[in-house]
Image 1 (cartoon, one colour):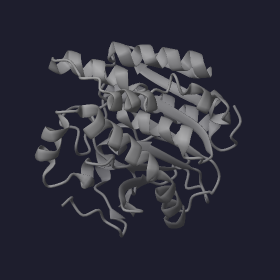
Image 2 (spheres, helix red, strand yellow):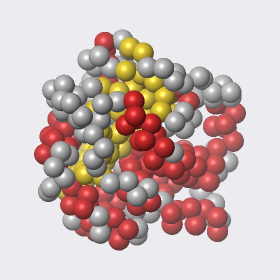
Image 3 (cartoon, one colour):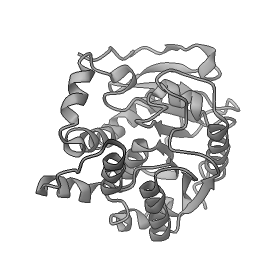
Length: 287
């Protein structure tokens, strides 16, 4: 049984931001930071964290609060993370090691994207947020969730920012092979899953959307080579913007990355770039 998400909003310690709220929308735990300017019926930005640090909604809200943005900034826990961590997580992760793509990455990305429309509807009921196009932010695996939402969810999106994103499953598996050793067994089912999580190949599904020209990719200079290469290829396929953060590796926070922690200098740089991008593109939906 997983930890109980809170369905009634409550306050959080001040280290996560100014007057943050915690709760659950359509069963998905969230941390919500109110609009910086206190705007009525402000736009809504939804953020998915990494599987590396920061690996929870609370930790992501501290690492990447989108400071100064006059919008609701809502950070969601990914499946198996944060308040959704099951009691038998060690067993779950041990089983996932036998086939990380089919038993961990694909279901996590797929389920987070599929639950998003219901989560969005619930958030709009709970928060004083506009019903216009939303902003999306995703880090690492959260970036793959954001791309899946863009391609499949049919939710109007005004702008998006992806930080060190997972763009292809094959790139993700290659990183794991190098980090942990061994070779992944590419079965027909795994090949099919990898085709689903290949947003360079699936770029035409996003290219026709207005958000394609309002997509910002942020890559750390020292992020995984496969992720950096995929970001360049996606930029070229979509005509998206791509910026590099000098000296930044893959994580956006210090380990363990589960709870709120002081913002790192690299995360502060990313935060400023993401907030500026969304601030320029979110409210009016024009490039």
